Image (cartoon, rainbow, N blue to C red):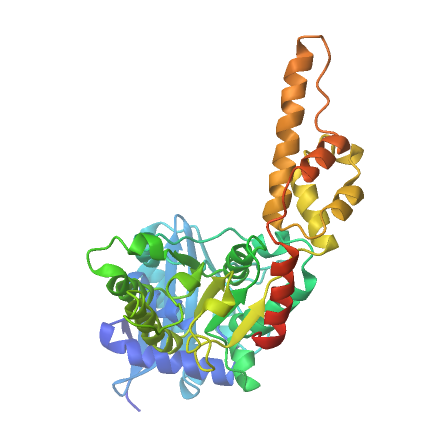
Length: 428
């Protein structure tokens, strides 16, 4: 049998590291560190390999942060484990990292499935009563530049939870969109194809943009909003700028792409002479199938006027779902009012009366009425200061008056047409 030797990692060893990682995953336990992290540390940090008969039979990989060192990966082939190769690799790696001035060398292991003799032999001790937590950063540094060029951003966590009420819409979006995308491996096992594109439709101001942003927040994916009005000024023209934008989006690892008021660029084609927007509509119809071929992407298009969209735009194969977003229910209106009423006076306000009085109001209508009541209360407080009175903040009557002066954005006719659209066009 050829003598076993330990040497530093070479870039040509990448394939062997991959085989060791896969063997460890299939025969022992899921490695704590992912393959991409292990390969990155091989090239950027510290790694040694065990070689026998010109074949890599083991590897140890480490990284350091200040005086703390971590064993990122230790694996050996089945036959080499009996030769104590793991211990020799650990000793070689420690020697390799010694010049860094480490005071501690640590390792994280799965609870079961891995032999720990090599670590015990090299003086590692198990620590009791420790819990390990981790959080994966969803957008890496290299991706932030591309995201910045697109005017996109990473939205804060918690936007999904901040949407009060609208339980039917939230549950539908959670089950149809979020669940298959967030748990793609499980979805694939059940034969579910994760959605790539969806249309949200409903009256103006009902929160379609809020839902799109919340989906991105829930998935922890980059959020890119495409503004056709801004692209129209591009020297390449709207169609060309739209094409270039989606080519840049292809560089992102995960993305929710949002187009609001999509009816502006997906209007019904036809008529003589042809509309100037028909070329833009044609371009968008070409873009969507290409977009759908890219994994970890979701296109969300929103429209207030779904009947105005080109019939080919909503065809099966382009959009997985066409989902209605209606006016807020009682619970949603209660949540919206509670958000805009100052905390200092909330317990003195008859919120239930305001909820009842704003049936048929959109979220934007409620926000307008709340701001109007606050402004009125502020003006009264400033006037009262001259008379020596202490300001008290808005009262229920201030909100009632503001509601009476607010015209609902969605008329009964529009609300009725929306219900018809649900029956005729929605695809759930």
